[in-house]
Each structure stands twice: as structure tokens, then as C-alpha cells.
Image 1 (tube, one colour):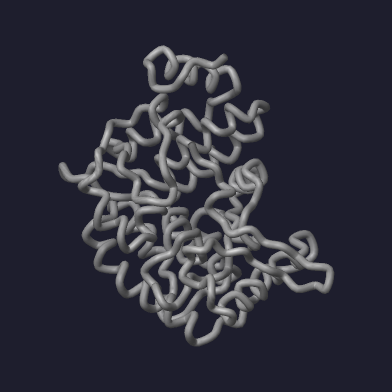
Image 2 (spheres, rainbow, N blue to C red):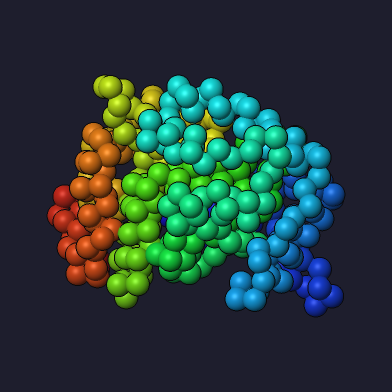
Length: 305
């Protein structure tokens, strides 16, 4: 199952006002003191931000950070043309993100809001699951502002601004994808049990994050997690691709630290909206519990004790 805390490095604010980001031992920047300082600086700006009183903090990105953005934008562009679904590609063209510099989140909002009414705000890293989804229900995407380590620009062990913007903002520039994402967020306001909330988060993972869709008989990606990953976008076509199945999507165990070996494909945008979109629009605690029970009866998960 999806545990959002595993995706982000923990952040500590010390009594002297310094902010420390705790990178995993395997993180490419773990022993780079300058990178650690920079991560703390960017996280500190988000921690100090008052969303009710101030605009999203502006980050003065260094040339090396802009170069990471340029490298990833350049390398992903031909892969998007080859592997991304047309709905994503058309949205990407309308949003027209800069490729020569890291955009400020305010700049992303200025481009995105006229298209679908969405805006971006910042976070230092982990956002509690219900807070994240509540924002989605208000057409607000909470994003990190840091970049991956420059030694491996085509790899990141955690979501950075490249994932949050190149993956999600391009997706949210499609009114149809944006509506599905908003419905997922609004569902959270109806759910009281953590089990139901987790079921929604897992369906979101296998659709908005790692969804694929048929196009002219071929699987094409629309999920932000695939389309922001240089490696995963080239591998997803060789994974096990199953038909959309809410029971399976909401209960399948998976490892977030590796490429996803099982994906779920919609036959079309209409099919995605009919299955996933309708689920997000109508799910409540009772419906989520019924789907979980059906998974138990199919032997997909152990029976609750």
C-alpha cells in the first residue's frame, strides 16, 4: 500500500532556526554538505511561509539547479512524444512550461490557472495525507521546491519539483485529468475512516500517478510518476498491464522504491472517467469498505480480523 511518508525525506527545524533535511543513506546527495545546506534552506522557506498572508516563496535557484531542470526537460521531451498519451501531450503544449530555467511555483500557477483553475503552493516535503487531498479538492497542488542532486539529474529517490511540475502540472493542464484529480481530493472530505482514505490514495497511485491508457492499440502513459521519470517511462510498456479494476487497484501491494511491475490501463479517456472518475466522485466509507470486502472474497488481501 501507499504510505506517503516514505516518499519524502524528513525535515527538522532546530531551536536555532536552522532546518535539516534527513536524506536516506542511499541518496546521491547524502554526503554533499552544500546540497544538504541547500535542501535545508529551501525547506526552511516553505516552513516559514504563511499561506494565508503571503505569496508562495520565491527561490533564487542557482545555475547548477537550472542546469538540472534543463537536462531533464531536454531528455524527457522526445520520450514524451513517443510514450505519452495525446491528452497529456496536448495539455503540455498548452501549459508551455519553460525548459531553460526552473519555474517559480507562482509562474506555474500563472500559466495553469487560466487553463483549469488550479494553482500551486509549497511544502518542505511531507504533507499529511488528508491535508494533501483536501488541497486537491480546492484545486490546489502542494509541491516541493527543491531539485534532485546534480550528480544524477535523471534520477531521484523522492518527489522533487521536476516530478511535481513536469509530471503533475502538465497533467493538470488537461481539464479532464484536472477534474479527476479534483474529485479525488473532494472524496477525502466524505471519508471518515483511514481505511477508506487509504483505498482512495491507492487508486490515485495507480491512476493519476502511474496510469496508462490505450491509444491506437498501444499503451501510452498519462501518470505523473511515469512521465517525470527518465527510466520508468522507457520501461512501463514491458510491465504487466491489467485492465482497470478498482478492487485490485485499491488493495494491490507495491514497492514505491522500484519501478512499478503492475500497471492498470484505461481503454480511453471516457473509460478512465467512467471507472476512476466516477469512483472518486461517489466513494464513501461504505463503498470503500464494500470494495475491500470484495478483495478479501477474491483472495487479494487477507480477511480482516
